Length: 135
Image 1: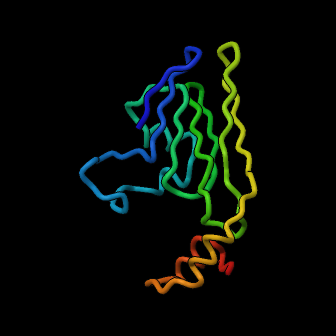
Image 2: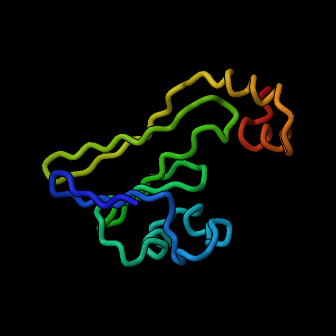
């Protein structure tokens, strides 16, 4: 978790909105973040007054802005059918915040080569979930 201020804009960057720090990640409610609406993201991050909230934990990219807050999740690296790394770009100018999510191609062949040659439990499940069955 990182709380920061830049050009008078407060930012809160976290892996996820953990309502209960004692629970394991899989026990926390993911549906509100996955839906990512103007109605449920403020509830998920209730108590946080930052202007910009950056988060992740699940895979789809999201940009949701309410009157008070920009919620941004660039998405996951891997976990898709193509080798693209999502990157969130924030521009702060004159009290205004603009956001953009870009995708940058990268070479994941070295990792896939290791995956293909290493015995491990659930290798095919990992390939399907994280690499779209690419080999």
